[in-house]
Image (cartoon, rainbow, N blue to C red; front, top):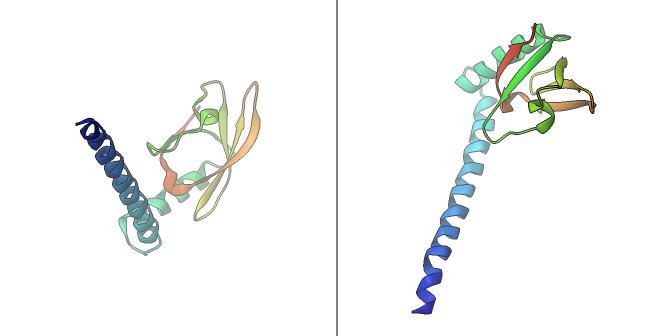
Length: 117
């Protein structure tokens, strides 16, 4: 009877491992699809790249995918400035009272961009 207590915990852990493995496979397939020309992901990435290219040197706010979190970006006192953009990456300078650094982000991690005036 004591062993039945562990059964839900073991099944829950196995379910977690399965879901985690599926998330990784989906991410890998999305990356592969992003390289296929005329796919929705590729078109979205191209539009975002052109948009960020127009914002080079301007202060922006970035909106990331749900699994991406960077405390430097989400600190309201820090400013983000686009320094460079290419087909896969965007280089952002984060400047604030306590930090002044440059960070590199993949375009597929970014959901949206907003210019700060």
